[in-house]
Length: 138
Image 1 (cartoon, helix red, strand yellow):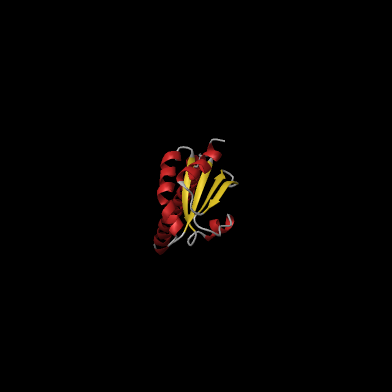
Image 2 (tube, rainbow, N blue to C red):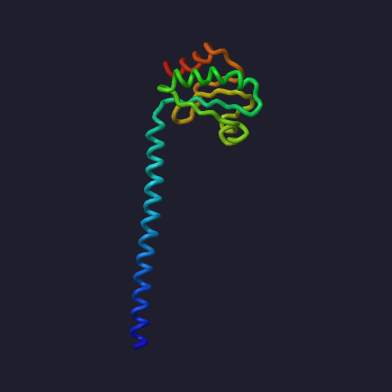
């Protein structure tokens, strides 16, 4: 009788373990699948040919002066150009990648990350728009 009870217990435990591993496996599969979807979405979203990085920092007077012009440019050119504000104190990797020594700095890159235009410091609105148009309407 004891052997039969032990066998039933082992069968139940084995079934529960199989169910547990199936649930875990499905969860991992779903996670991997969702990460692939997120990567695919990023690829689909990043369809604009160019990206403008605005490198700024805390207590940067020039950055504050450029804020209105930058926002107008975002509004005007957002169909053609992706915009990203980069805080140099928080994103050291990107700051170093593009060798940023002065803020504000503006860099327009293509999809591969190749620099197409680069400016530093305060820029008048008309000149800033021309900088963008020289790249996107080339």
